Length: 486
Image 1 (cartoon, helix red, strand yellow):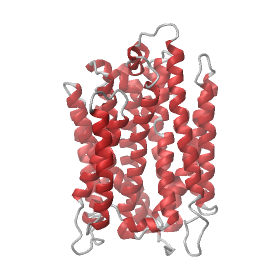
Image 2 (spheres, helix red, strand yellow; image 1 turned 90 degrees about the horizontal axis):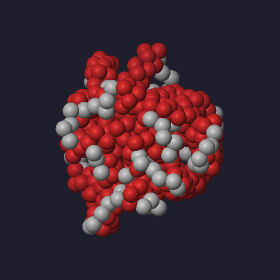
Image 3 (cartoon, one colour; image 1 turned 180 degrees about the vertical axis):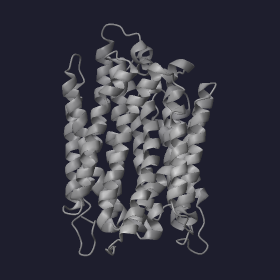
Image 4 (cartoon, one colour; image 1 turned 60 degrees about the vertical axis):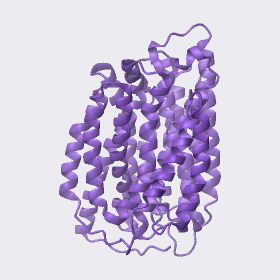
């Protein structure tokens, strides 16, 4: 699908950078929020005396709802307009941040987190599509590189902010912290995003709500089945829901007049493999900060703030590599850069795996985390550019919704699967210790059992990265006239 290259005027260029400033604020806000809870979870769970299952669903409720609604809102954006959906999402996210911090009990907090996730989905769905609309192809790689840079900075700030607030201000400020920045982002977006008619809407096109429902039931079932500590009939119900509704979703999308998922896009092998690699890289990197935050608190007996500081290298690596990768996309095939990035991720995870032992030098762990982040930043920009430049403008919302959904699905499944892997070898009395942080009561020999669980989780991330490397290579070689099929 060739994309015409046009010269942008200075006015158009300035407009593009203003759009990027708006979307950067949204990305910063939503991703900082996710990072703050990675290290703040023990403080929230301790305040509410949450059991392990409730503690996990404080994280997973956000991930599941955000993942499915990103796909739904991608179609909303193509039909009704990206500006209005972006602003509505930012307003909802800000309001729900305020309400989450006021939650009187853990179950209410989980519900508020799910509603907050809906607002975050509206924001994330539209960021890359708005950038792709605003920049010509020759500048798109640079703009998306900055977008990844901002996302990396958000992930860099999240654990630090979350640890600081949990220790010095209380867990409620982990959520209230979002409110002033959300209001500023809303005002700036209202001023800078130009109102636009939903001209891409086809006659009779409508939102595929049933497709969204089937997707929610399938994915929710899978997360429930994989959630460690699920008891009674819950795992069986989860697997049945996944097994029944995944094929229902697929068959529905093949017959729907306005499908949530445009299956025709998957006829392009480069597009398909780039999306598969997106999912696998997300699975491999997204829960690493969560795992290491829990490891540093539970095994190394650190408080939330210092644990947050110690996971910074993974996002610092993304911060360094993403703008470099953005510049390289105009000169080196995406297939080469993205695959090289995944190889670096694998090397970093191997270093982390070997460092999961008592008394390891912090520099060793920092090196592994940095290398993992550097590889992910190297992968993300060319891979995202490859996806977004291979679809027509009237499918950018759906394409970005799918990309974001796969990214978030990787996060949700990674969190569920790695926490399951950590908990699997633990005796019943230690399963809650993973979430208790430095307050956990450990006996002699308990650290060795916990380390075994953490190593199993990191090994799972390594396996996903190997599959991601294979998918990235299978996207094929460039075709004449197709700028990012590389």
